[in-house]
Length: 334
Image (cartoon, rainbow, N blue to C red; front, side, top):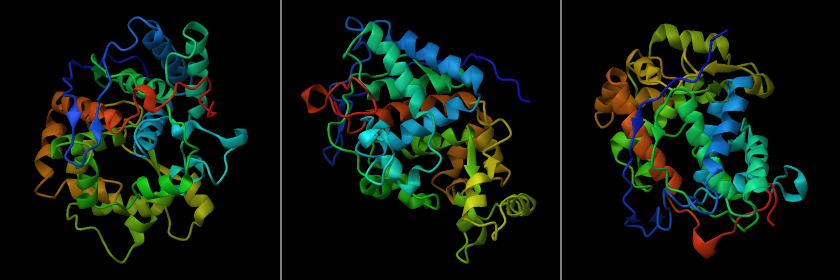
């Protein structure tokens, strides 16, 4: 069993330029790295303690929290809408009703941390901020970078969650490189940052159901560096006739150090061991290959670019001020 401990990550100061993109979506406007300095100075330590405790019990926690934040932020910005359960249960009308949110876990952990924060700072800290802080702590706990100046001040959504919006906003497992770069460019990311944010795949697993098209489609990826032996191993682990239920249960580790945040993901891409189409394509496309090579050789460079990309993703299009609320409970629109 892989031993997991608190690995000291490289510390980087990320300078966030607050402003607007060309399409008018605010990036970080109204956020501040010292937002809770007076209203709830204990919040970061509470979140850190909750994430560390859960991660020691379940080493897959960091990967789940990072994916949870990504899926929340991709739908109308980080507003904790993915945490809302109408009538206390998951229905087709909730974001979790979207098939693209298959495998999302640890929502209950955010609610537990929120309860701990509420006991100290009632109705002051949003679920959206707690979710972003938890994802940040998850990365740091796993050995990744700790961002010193993490912008805070997000508000929670006040509108009912929408599965249809989640379906439309979340990228499909077979998304191509062009669409991926466009998606992140809208959030103000450079190509280097876009490659770096995909490095989040260094944590966790990929379910076989998300590999079926990549392995068995008649329209193959443009990638030319796919390792034949590795592709054969994928097909053995994820057979075409396994059926939807088996494909949802079976999975592949994203890399051999799937509970440690490191640059092994990029090392694998250079060896032709990418799981998804986007993984394989990045290693050969002229726009992205240089950054894949750079990050495979220099983990510090990856950490710096990832930190910047994390801030941009978590700050894009968020609700601030009176445009949102601070929920008492993350699962209810109160």
